[in-house]
Image (cartoon, rainbow, N blue to C red; front, side):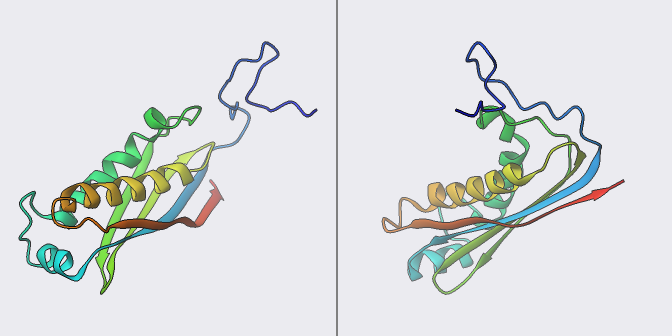
Length: 150
């Protein structure tokens, strides 16, 4: 049986050692979608929900979520993010959230981009749950990741 690299000889979980890797410029972009009914979308567009400006709050929450990824995901490295951008776009059937995370480091930022999207979508869910009982979060996925030698 192959030994997993994050389990030591005593069977304890450990973070993967990336110390031998060179510093690289890294970027990742993820997206996801939350379906909402037409009335909820109208309330969001007109900024009429009791909890406030859904789009702005969701975008800020997504940034905060990306910054806290290593606190939420076990064995995830703490990264010094150089940029996190979250954009929420309203469509006829819901809202698409997109998150791009960047850093200079020894490991990728996919988890930060995915976490940013999820937290943005969960924030929309939370802010709209009083008026929309049929919301569905779906299609969360990594769109791209890059790494460039410095």
